[in-house]
Image 1 (tube, rainbow, N blue to C red):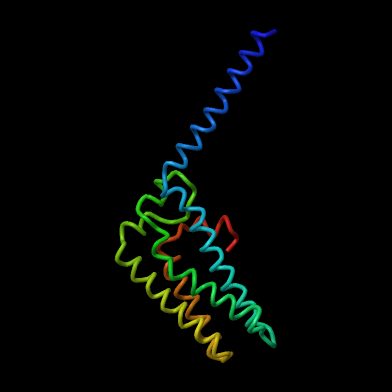
Image 2: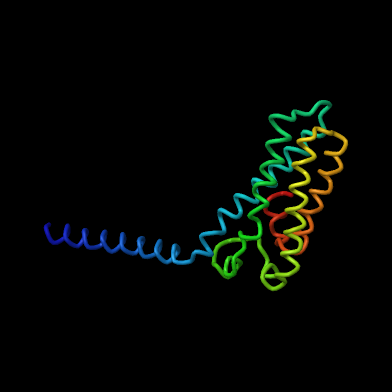
Length: 165
């Protein structure tokens, strides 16, 4: 049996090395490694906007626990938005992403839309901190349009199909 256990050890070592090799190949692409964190941050922003719009439907809004923390999340995340899409972090990275190649093909337009979104996020947070409910309702619509401007041209339609949106 020593031979069988030696073969078994060799097979186990080969299996482990192949897993390590696979992990190293995946880790070799810094662009691919950025996709999941990007998706998580974008979901944070979407969740924050949804929490705000849901809260605005209530007779009395919770400024301190819902509105202001969520506008802060949108503002904070948006400051880095344009850094989340380095060249090579699209579909070619081999990781599932809803980012369309147009992001990199129409970089000037994407940047313009991103900067508009960032400006709106700052304004949204300022309006929330003023605690002016009517102004916040208007700004929430504007913020939603700023997000949608990017989604219309730069996010795959598969996202809505797969995420029931």
